[in-house]
Length: 139
Length: 200
Image (cartoon, rainbow over all chains, first blue to last red; front, side, top):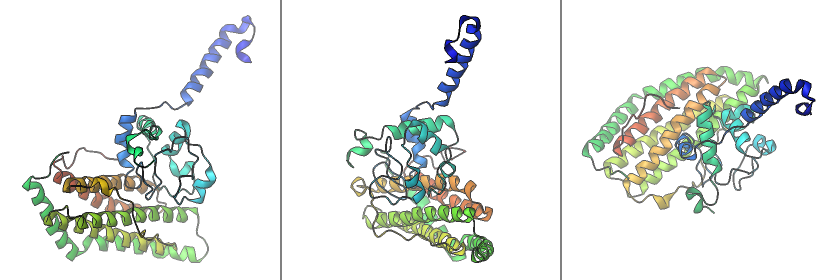
């Protein structure tokens, strides 16, 4: 591994390793503020709600779920076939541009372009599990 | 939750209903959308018939159908409100007026889908609304306001995606209507009807 090369090039290598580390850290989307994300979620409620399938699927339990698998929701073939596991990274990418991330999705929405707002929204979605107030009645 | 007992707010709702009836008679907005959509879709239909349809047209149909599905739900939601027995008569009139707008949106969007050679989605037989949480007029108005606010974002998020820019223009005219609904409902709830300069 380049980071363990001999001392003669240690300084240069260390710098390169730090740069690589910075890129890697920067590539992982940060988890935002769920409370702020709940406010961002108000943009979604023409089609979605946490605990009910509507025009779009419900979001309780979305984190960790495979795309196209919420029960009793009629997904597009594109979303079913995408088989994306919804985590911080995949939700961030999808919410940045749903129709380019999953071409053929019925989610006709340009996305949430602001990185911070998207991170907050992902944080809100991530906590929509069985213990979330919005989800308790639907479990 | 804030109360909605302010007479001035109800007056605004009543005035809105009266204005809406006048606008309905004029039908200016509907005619404008229909004109745009029909003029646009004539050419597209020809392209589809000739077998030159592409992914962009299919995407436009998908976006339109998603909007139609949400509009169908809005129609049902206003019916739920009107039938709830929780709305004062003048408020119920406004709810029915707004429902009428959503029905017109459905009709216009469905015509656009058909013009593109697609099949418009139909209303569900039953919608799953949080009826257990609707116990007062303010609950119904808050529920409706949430849907309208979401609709503003939904159309704002759809407008940039249409391949056909005439569809974007038509969606923008619907967005404006949803935004007015939202403002009126917020005002009725005792909230600032226009809480900011920008919305996404």
